Amino acid sequence: MKTLLIPAYYVFFKDTVSEFRTRYAFNALLLFVVTTISITLFAFGGDTVSSHVLAGIFWIIVFFSAMSGLSRTFVSEEERGTSVTLQLLTNATSVYLGKLVFNIVLIFFLTCIIAVLYQILVKDFVVQSYGIFWLTLFLGSIGLASASTILAAIIAKANTKGTLYPVVSFPILLPLLLTLINATRLAMEGAFFKEAVTDMQVLISYPIVLITVSLLFFEIVWKE
Amino acid sequence: MFEKLFLKISITIWLTIIIVVGFVFPIVDFPQHWYEFPLIPGLEDKARNIFFHVPMAWVTVVAFVMSMVYAIQYLKKRTSEYDIRSVAAAELGMLFCVLATVTGAIWAKFNWGTFWNWDPRQTSIFILLLIYAAYFALRSAIDEEQKKATLSAVYSIIAGVTVPFFIFVMPRMMKGLHPGSKGDSEGAGPVLEFKMAPNMLVIFFASLIGFTLLYWWMYSVSVRLKRLEEKV
Image (cartoon, rainbow over all chains, first blue to last red; front, side):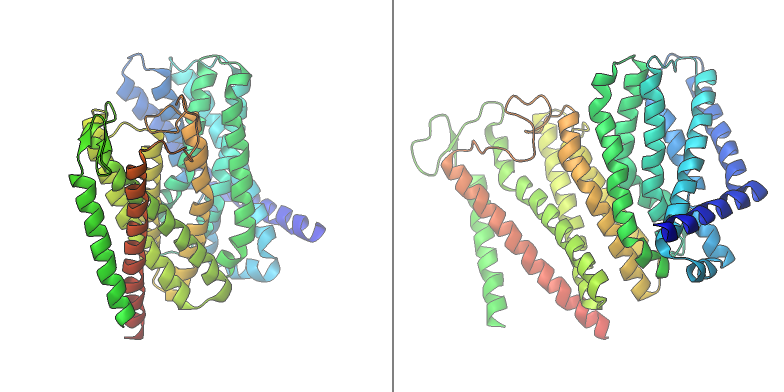
């Protein structure tokens, strides 16, 4: 266990430090978020929009900003040629766990920013059950990161990295996104926690399934 | 050689009989002869779709599972034979997936009023189409043969584990028009109790077998072709 978690912590630490130094992913993501939110605001133009649509647009913004940022973790290793060094220095599972935690933190941070901006700027987006809302955001971040980390590792080995990533991720993430949209809508309509239990079960089981499969197959992808 | 010819001819005859029977046998109010189908209110002649649409969807799922199983085999044994089998199954799966989607959509137009209404089953077959499309997009983006085979095998496994979410979970959460959706009086779930008339049931299962054999034949031809291509 120690031989797994300590290297994983260092991989996470390395990624965080290099992110703080360059702020490459974060700046791009922040601008992306601001751009998409302002476009949606222009498009609404003061009209009243239903909670279904608002919840959908919220997760569209999260999905595409995640897609533009999360692939960096592996693509940058391949581009800078550091993946071979990392392969020599530590085992595959630790790399996966480190990158996974980094992606979860990044996407959760991002989702929080989007949530706050969205609540300030979009006047119809009123959340009534905050418990459901923040739990959805938290579990949603883990779910998004769990699927996109292994897919990013696959994509990093392909030729056309940028365009392929959303294409490959979308069908895998769709069951999660539909559940997230449903849970967000429930939170907006002020549902009790009891009503959101089915959604939460899906949101919890999805990352468990994907992280398990990723742990089994990551080494094959990583060593390819 | 003769076995293959025999298989080919018998599948042709088998499916011809099913197509003719499926379209020609009359649907009447009170069936008295073995060849008459009972009338189902609201479905009428549109009920015949079940002989073709459901087997196509079934073959799609069979092909998807086969592709995934061979992907796992490939990762274990690392011989191109399993990659060939996995791709052949995926290609045919995509073909039957399109066929099932189209037959379903046309049927929905006449029975539910629109070609598409995001019923959970329609959503799940749409996701399946997207998965196949992404699988082939991924394959075309990698040049090196071995890398292509390995990465697409892992992708098809990852896609495979998410399938239960939209086949078993989503239809129970969302209201839909297919049998087995949430709100269906006969209970939710992918496995339904068959309430078809016995003669329809016989033809339905005969069609299921026929389509599966057709798939098997197409699959074996495709695998042989790919083996030859690899040699050249």
